[in-house]
Length: 157
Image (cartoon, rainbow, N blue to C red; front, top):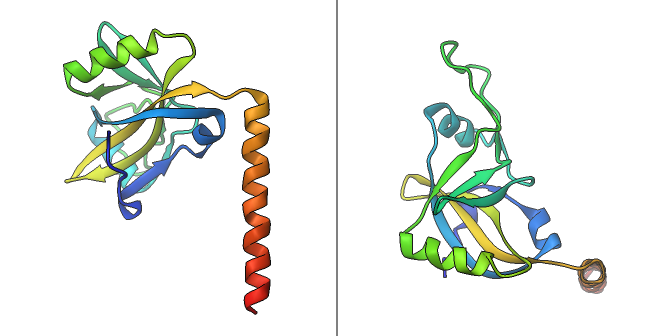
């Protein structure tokens, strides 16, 4: 089970994932990136919301993770912002994930990108899709919490 990264070291969060999925387990994986991608991530030019993880030939790949190149990027390379990025994990973890993903209804979704010891890591989750009524319950709970916070705030004034 991966430890939650510090919020100061976070690069991007996938807030839509918590709305669309129930998380069973969380994992941390390294990312294979090019130099211009790392520079863009330092500037926060990334969109993780549409990303998803696939398994091909016993390896994990993130698809749909969009890293926008900097305007000052080198002219001798042509950056592909939708490039498929490889995830790095131990073979035993990948085998365990393959077994779980093959079960009906399970998928792998990227939750966030963060820095750890000078390297960029991707937190992924083994997730099960929410039904429409579960999504409505999530909205109802969130709005209930907001109302309670508003009431507490007005009482303290």
